[in-house]
Image (cartoon, helix red, strand yellow):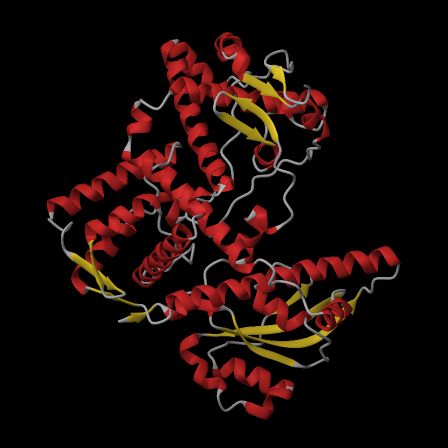
Length: 505
């Protein structure tokens, strides 16, 4: 029997950063209309900046922005040409993927709704943390496994002596002196560690901990010294205070969300049936592909070569489950309901499992598999909450879902167009980076055919500024890690010589 209560905490700070509505989003104005599809200012910026653009449209020149917009418009045209009646759209794997994308967006917007107006930091705490934000601590540290937390019970007042810190390290299984490291405000430490070090001034030789760092246990730290870089100018003081304020808002948002999720999951229990669990854990272990995260491999809707390999592996496992007549067998009981293996597989079709640990030892998979199932069920509860609030009807959720659906349909249609041109075009598609050489005539024909159904807000386009830095934004702790689809390499035309102007009467 395992309780879900301890596993209620979900979204890490990385997820909060990935949630675009967690920051002030740009005005979501309509940049282009293509039939019944739209491209917003926000989508344009995300598609240009959250994935790598081809060399012919990098940068922030007017020509680069025009090529980006033309590429996104062409993607919508390809999706329209693909239509709603094709092999991909009819695929259960595709339908599950789109459902999963929609529900992931709903959960993120549920987070925003739950935490809205509850993240303002306390001014006195803000001043205290800003006063130490310039510190760079030299630490000695070690981790106490959760099962050995009892060792800390009698440590007590002796903790202030540095010698007792080394002794505790040995008593908890450490060999030699505790390791050392340097931690600054900008270091990518867990939120609990950051709060423990930068909530106010600390003293030399002060022992900090135990700090709960999740499954890894409890962290103990001793302050060896620090280097302070105080903010001097008015601008530096303002910038540092603003950086501290943003981080405190993120931490408070996380705390509010954790409490909300904990309340939803309180009292819900998960109990596995031993024999089916052992068999499913053995089968699921084989879905981990080399050099890929387990949740990537478990996605049945992948459009890449690795995704298709995962699909073939998953199909073979599904065949084994059917051959062993396991589909109807009880797998676990959650919140009073018995779930069969088939029920579990149906849920994972739209929500790939997310494993908390990316690297596992030989005997760790069964335990991590239990946690992944628990997190899957937690997200199912959050989905119900989001549907009850009507978040599936939120325009931002509908646009996010449409973006992924159109991008995948367009990629499918692009492949069909190239295939229709023969194997020479297929070979060229692998190495030719100029889309106009491969698809130029076809894409131009679509711009002409849909000319009367396209509108462009040129004024809004000219107001947008893009970064020149290549970046790929990933949500490492979500079922679907890509923030946006890959950039659509279907045209490199720089001219906006089609459609009508939306910014003119």
